[in-house]
Structure formats: C-alpha cells, structure tokens
Image (cartoon, helix red, strand yellow):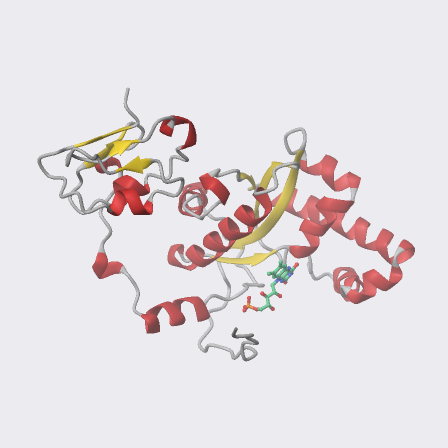
Length: 274
Ligand SMILES: Cc1cc2nc3c(=O)[nH]c(=O)nc-3n(C[C@H](O)[C@H](O)[C@H](O)COP(=O)(O)O)c2cc1C
C-alpha cells in the first residue's frame, strides 16, 4: 500500500505538502501530476500527518490518517494576540483545593488534550500515571517528607537552598507543602534512556496545566515530589512505574478553592538580539 494517495482531480499542485513535510519525503511529480512519495519514504515518515493537515483541498490521504481523521481548524476559535496573552497570563499555580474529587473522565479528557503536545520526531514518548486515590497521594507526601528529612541530615545546604526546612516545618504544623492538599496527582513517565522524553513530558504537562481551567480544574507543578522520585529509592518503590521508566514531572490536580481576579506581573524579559 502506498504511503499516501492524492486525488488528482482536486490537487492543485500548490506544493504545500512537499514543502511542509518534515523529512521531505514528498516529491512533485515531474510528469505534472499529483505529488508522490520519494523512494524509501515509508521508512522515513514520522506519521505527523502534516501532509494531510496542510492540504487546502483535502486531496492527500495518508495510509494512517485520511483527511476525515484530521478535523478542520476552526479559525473562529483561534486566539488573537490579546486573547493568547490573556489566556497564558491567567494560568495560575493552584495551591488550595476543594475536597471534591475530580471525575476520572475529566482527567482522562485533559490527558487526551495533552497528547497533542509536540515531541521530538513526533515520537510521542510520554506515558501517564494518575495517582487518583487521595489516600495514596497522602502516602506519597509522607515519602517525600522522609526524603526531605534525610536531605536535611545528609545534604543540609541543598535542603536549605530548596526551602525543604520550611516545607518540613509547615508539614509538622499540619500543612501539606508537598501536594497542597490536592486530591490527585498526574505524572509523566518514559523509559530512562529516551533522550527526547524529558522535553516532551514537560510540554505535555504544560498543556495539561493550561487546559485544566477549562474543566473548572486547577493544577500546580509538584517539584518536590518529582525530585524525590528521581533521588529517593523508597519513592521509586512506592510509585511502581514500569521497569526502567522514570518520573519526568508531575502536577497536583483538583478543584480550586479560590478564584484569581488579577494578572500578577512578572520580570521583564531578558533578550539578547543578534
Ligand atoms: C518545575 C516546577 C516545579 C514547581 N514545584 C512546585 C512545588 O513543588 N510546589 C508548589 O507549590 N509550586 C511549585 N511550582 C510552582 C511555582 O512556584 C510557580 O509556577 C511560580 O510561583 C509562579 O506562579 P504561577 O505559576 O502562578 O505563575 C513549580 C513550578 C515549576 C515550573
């Protein structure tokens, strides 16, 4: 089966598919007909389906994705620069949560959105673990606290620099500085040796965090938990990720208790123009 087929009745030979294909495996047919795959294209194709998505006439059908599998872009839903700035600026790290659990379906939908995040060579290496059971989230917080105590004893400078002393103090005073009382935690994982997975996971988590408010949800990066899962064997054991996989980043997740009313300022950008 050919890698893709082109409807010669509708193709205008505009060349968009040829130019946009990342590995450049589409050639304009010299005989003045529709574009064709180059020799060996099947081995180089990264299944990004840009060829299908960029065709203005729906003329190109990839063997793994027809135009029907790629919904049209709804221009009226795209953001203006002001809307994009407002949307991104209004994202907040949420640190107080209602006790109400989030429906599994909403979390699954968020992860479904996050899978559209970019990844090197479109490799989509990210896998997810949702610690849905709030009791388990609390147990993981205990393990982070054990790690912090150990860090305080053995690496006091690093512990202090990362404010673990303060987090411990708050914990001892009954405040959860690890997961902020969030009912759920979502983390990304992938095989340790996958060089592209870290950036892909970070972006996927950012997608999830950005999409969360549209479900009425709030999120916050769980940095202490992530660090503990990289360095503390009891946490590795408690998580039970698939063999050889590492935690690449995590978000607390739940219904926010408060709503933000203003957009706080941030530092001016530092830019070197060349
Ligand atoms: C990698 C990373 C790790 C973070 N870890 C934590 C954390 O463990 N606990 C927490 O309350 N906030 C954590 N945060 C949230 C930051 O403190 C927050 O992004 C920052 O204060 C700015 O606030 P904003 O996200 O609302 O703009 C983390 C953020 C990032 C990007």
